[in-house]
Length: 343
Ligand code: TXA
Ligand code: MG
Image (cartoon, rainbow, N blue to C red; front, side):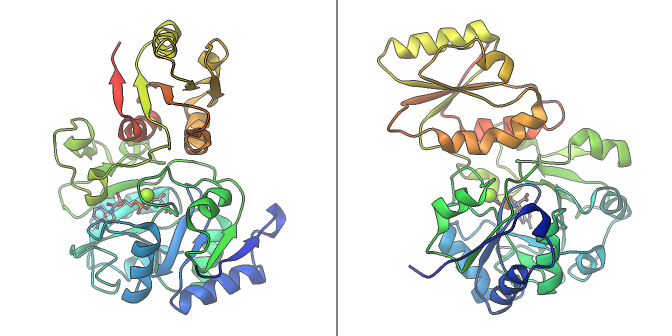
């Protein structure tokens, strides 16, 4: 156990607080600190300090071959970490930063080798959250930060989730309330002159990217589970709640049928569904995720975490349309699921 500092920032104190300076000092000293971003909470270390970065892998139990994202406050700082920016990448950076998007680019070696897990590329993101921005400005360093959860679990969208996974394992936690987007950033490979490829769908949608630069490729492994994903992290089991999960395609009646069938096997069933479906379903526990796909994205991870195996044996989750941020929601749900019931 190490001692974990906890700083609670209320809404009107999100910037310029002494607490953020203290957190930045801990990162500069080579320890690791969790902080809020607009997507999920991150676990930050000085990205130029290999020993500090190693602490992230240990605290999370993260596989060594899964590279991290380097976070910076400004476009100028991003440019200092790479050899080259294709013209389309400059357009995307202008359009979407700060924001929920991560650019994979040719590394110039300023970030420590374990940030990139030995690859010659580096993933970089400029987060759009007042606490993250202030922390990065105070650090004046690239900050390597994966999501601040134990490897394999759903990403943290509140400081309570970080406490549950990492208290006693990290130097500090900055509590800035619930995150907004709720899904991680879009990871986009910009190493090819010919055009970009989405490696992980996220907060900036394929439709939004295509509005700016035209057709954008997508890693074939995202559609076909037999393909090996390009992004190293995506081959691991992820986003898993404590309780097994079945994803069900189809209307309310179909979901209720699967609930009834499993209850007749004496299982206690929890349901995750859009508010419209949740209002009609009968099960042991029902969580309404929201009225639209943005609300569903915001609430998904905390809802996945709220089911306990003491109360529920199986989660049955509605399957959503892949439009907009639905592409990211369904990518995460397919990874969390133990099986899929087709329409
Ligand atoms: O929204 C987010 O992106 C959050 C917040 C904290 O910024 N971070 C996050 O980090 O989700 P993490 O470590 O959980 O996911 C990073 C993803 C992994 O799938 C990893 O494999 C991929 O980015 N990645 C990192 N560096 C890469 C690289 N050089 N090439 C390809 N994929 C890379
Ligand atoms: Mg993660």
